[in-house]
Length: 530
Image (cartoon, rainbow, N blue to C red; front, side, top):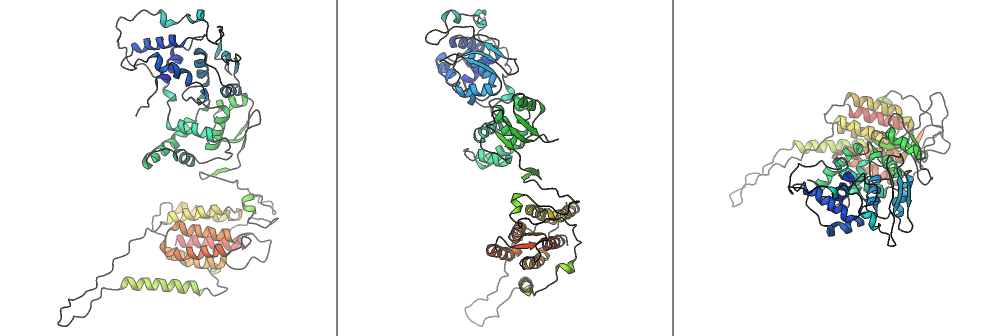
């Protein structure tokens, strides 16, 4: 569906296309007459507009030129120069921040001189103003090419459809979202997912859910191409363009980087992705520093790379530091081979879990084996023979596949973000490569049996040696709870409730040996691929 364009915007486009070489202000009536003569040649395309319908709109739309979409700043300056319109302070500040030179009259604030930053566009007023601030009458009868044209013999002569004036800057959904984000991103200092930005933008739009989903997918796919050349994007300051690239985590091309440096801003990019890691404006009012790294499409705090030659390493990540004792020594050790005999050593009786699990399985099997029962034949009476119908089979549950379960386990281990689990995560990723296309259902029973031992070992006493690698017990149980919830199996509901109760009862200062965590993860890995 083609967007409806107002007559005012059409006249603006006509002025820029056919009056770009005009170097002096022109009265509105002369411009409208020339525009209508042009439209007479293309009656099949444009309709003729009256002076009274757009005279006020031509000035009203450019009261705040910084909010007008579809035009570059130089084009807006040309329109205000030709129409003799005042420039507000906000737009003047934008032009000066871009490095352009501009001079205004006082107090009318009309443009007397303008030169773009690169010097390719320049306008200088050669007119004088009367006491009312209007253009003098002797200059208003200046060289207007349309006034010298010969009358058209055939008024409705069709010469074909003219080319669109600005086909590349048509207002699209990505541009609308970028303009909305540019007004609300002033205080955002960290990258945000494009999906979240689209959802926030669509939250206040009165569209159907299906339409919103379509718009969201379209905007998300076209954002990168829209911001590919930000120096050509109209309606934004340089600082706003940098802010948009920073928030949406989009690469910056070399030409825009040179433009930013030419304006006196400080900027640093990654190599070879060319993402913004640091930006500081010329006046020092805007500063952005990337404190997150892209990992599997999600921005997370940077992971500290451990030095294998250094035996002592103090972990300084603030999000992980709260789970370790102050000054604790973190050391990465090679992952031990999985030994089932050592994992399932029972130092204390844990029959509670096994008894309950065996009883539950036996009860389910007995229920499924039951056959329809019939009552004895009744005696001679009016009572009819009653037969018990077999119960309906329960609805089949969607059991997750082995591949999906491995992905869930990997995501849960990544959520722990512990340096000591790098070897475990690597083992999970290697197993995932082997079972990437394995769609067989995961053995929930084996996982349930292993969860019993894992939860039991997790609830044992605190580590006796403070020098051992430790992790918060509450965080570990939250990881197990997340893993159980994502499996989405009714057979694990008991463990989910048990974990929720234990998490509520635990103290934040409780610790668990990292070795027990590794053994528990290895047990889950073996149970999934059994």
